[in-house]
Length: 190
Image 1 (cartoon, rainbow, N blue to C red):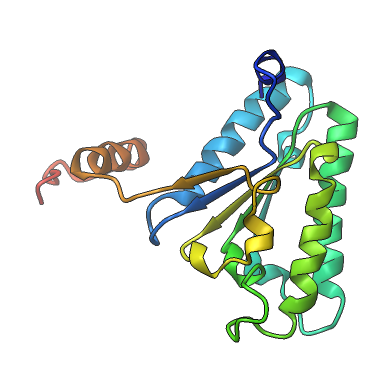
Image 2: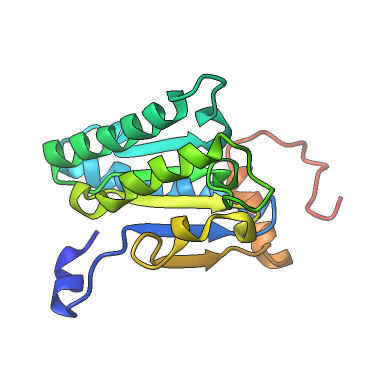
């Protein structure tokens, strides 16, 4: 969000982030936090936040018809480009369960359909810096992702998200239960 800081230090802004870790460790909550940040930025510039955050579940892209997943990927990136051109705000494409469409090719693990989906995604990632989009991949299985999809220049930041400790878990629980009625007899211990 602060291009002048990157420019001052002579660095390029990251265009891709990989969030990985075990199931249930809040990778999607990080996406929601990013959405909240974008909402504030968009509101300040008079844009609609919902257009600046594109949440996609990997399995939703898959389709039984040849060419449909590739067209869906092109549409997602086109939508991000259009938003950036219109507002100047960097959109975020959050791809949850990324391993479902970006699995390693020719490993015996991926299906034939991924032989066309992965290249379509890589082609769109080539122009991601110009589109201004930030691509965030979330996965439980980083080792199953195709190396070409997560190499430097495409995915610049890789963050392992671990499970919260007991104290952090308590704080998360309390924040999420803040507006929910709970019996007075209920305590954190029971």
